[in-house]
Length: 614
Ligand code: GLC
Image (cartoon, rainbow, N blue to C red; front, side):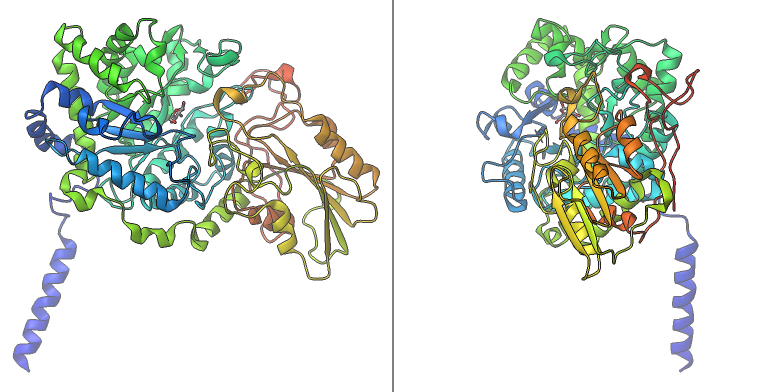
């Protein structure tokens, strides 16, 4: 007996000693990327010029002229852009099979370096049918809840990993300063401090447990820098008003507003940064050597991958070869070249052979790419590369949807509530619902959902706001619905769900943010029926709402809530009191825009931080 007791005692003491010990030096969970330089440099030393150049190219899955090009051109990365679904269809299985099949080709190259596969899972794994779609960043900004934002992105990472895909072009940490910009909803806020806090939380969530965690993904802080600060009328493509335009600011202001969030993202360990299309005082960021190399890499010490945006290199100079020279020498490490990757490969090889791009610039770029691949465990062997299909069970799960529902609840901002119209009782005789956005899953998800520009109707799995209302009320309560608002007479209350149709990027630039006249007509019709009117606005930004606000007894800004419409009903019926606070100033008229907290004078319809509760 004595012997047993002694050995038991020893075990207890040993366990306690281990717990006390500082983690062993081998705990590389959050090691800086340069921790992997020994391995990366050893591999780099074996690489030919062609293999190095191939590592720096990210082609688009849907535009691969043939899958074998991954091997022929030693491609380092593949992306799926907003509209890039597998040929076999938009299912979890089809995505997983595409991912695995392309990785298998990469492993057949001489050095067998796996691909990094990138996608815009900007509010959930939003390209893939059945994924949970979370509120877009503008709504998350109104939660003021970094822990929630971190958890939303941790879940997003897991749903991405179910398809094998492990590189997210998120979070967007734009500081949107002019709501007329079509990407306002991708921004957490007009306030750089709030963007910095929530952007870092998103990075921690996506890269949870460290890059080696098989449930984590590589995060990308984007778009560096000044994407949300462009001057109205300087927009780039296809007549855009703001998108990809020129950000005209002195350096101190530019840093304070638009570089500021990157400090927190880098401190949170973000592994990639995507460079913005826009210019700063007339110089394209993609070719901006001072900002990409001297500031981002040297001053801020960023050790990860600097990637260009989709064909952004083309905009740097009218001659493509010169554009490549300027961009790579400025500090671009990975080139997002969706279609003309063969030409890019040839031209960059020429540039190096002609001495116009120095080999040390190529080596720095490839070192950064290899650092990330080692840090993510991709170099640990085939098992670490291919998708883990056991994660399919979590994809779109009830647990994930419950988190999204919580995010919806916390993102809603109550702007008006006369005579305690809200919360609604669940046992009213009749509730009349109206408006184009009440029963349209695509509309409530917004852009970057299934398709780049989003869509209309049942584009994926989820709960519309009308369905959520019907689920929430007592059995005896009648819920009626007309799109145009007719038939409200005699109802206990009417709910109008109105707002913007989906859009993304420059196609969302608007010079006028007035409500659609049909939406105004719906609210007028409800008012004329003589019943209390609740308005729920589905939009990617504040809009000009004055006349509808007058007619409404209660008004809720719901932003772009995503698939879990139940979160809206939770607040309408008082299961949760609204706690959201505006992350953007709400303009009184178009003449006020741009209007941001800190302006003098500052007389918005609703100020930054405004939000009522019950
Ligand atoms: C787009 C966007 C960028 C996105 C990329 C890949 O043009 O600017 O946010 O990550 O292309 O889809």
